[in-house]
Length: 253
Ligand SMILES: NC(=O)c1ccc[n+]([C@@H]2O[C@H](COP(=O)([O-])OP(=O)(O)OC[C@H]3O[C@@H](n4cnc5c(N)ncnc54)[C@H](O)[C@@H]3O)[C@@H](O)[C@H]2O)c1
Image 1 (cartoon, helix red, strand yellow):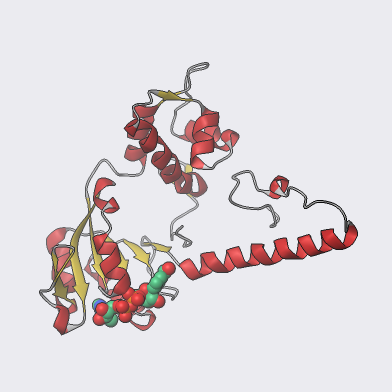
Image 2 (spheres, protein in one colour; image 1 turned 135 degrees about the vertical axis):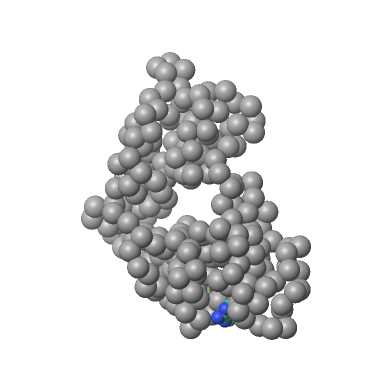
């Protein structure tokens, strides 16, 4: 869902393309589900369907990992979970700080899914003095004045920004100056960061706007279709889905 970009070359980590890196979490999520059901092996077609990705793309992605599967057997689920986790850096624990503990920051802090994926919420930071010391998700909120010390003491390299838009850039600057090199930004603002710092931006309203665009397009096509074939039944437009099923092929590649 993250819609941001990274401030790194398109190719990184032993030449794995950024688009492949972006799909690795989708494979991992699907594989984790299979692993939890003790499924030992999976074909590229099954895994592609579970991850919502085209199977040829999946095979190409896995070739970057040096994983080719076994003909007639498929891929070893546990080994792929390990391989992808290792590639994504999830075999180590990542301490994360969340800055801005309002509605969104508190919801993120309460989300149990980070820990199981290797992300430990090391600290919650807010500028409101009234919040200092109050526990959220069992973690006492610390005042923003402590930001640099918190980052340094906890060896934090990933910061999550959930402040109002106006505070996001100054908070980002302080995080980066303190040593944070990856930012997940929820505030509706474009952050400027130095080279070597990765920024991912999550914006649900942008996702909704994209869906609205497709809804509008579907409605327009339906109306045009009705006008051209007033008696024809509504046609199946699944053929217009992109190779991944979730991205209609409306844009030139
Ligand atoms: N990306 C998304 O999909 C999405 C969804 C909802 C909200 N948002 C955005 O997330 C942000 C937070 O939304 P919210 O509803 O939780 O707001 P909120 O007002 O409930 O919380 C913001 C918190 O940030 C704190 N804060 C302000 N300045 C700060 C600073 N300099 N340092 C540390 N903390 C600071 C405030 O004290 C407050 O607790 C907003 O920018 C909002 O637009 C994004």
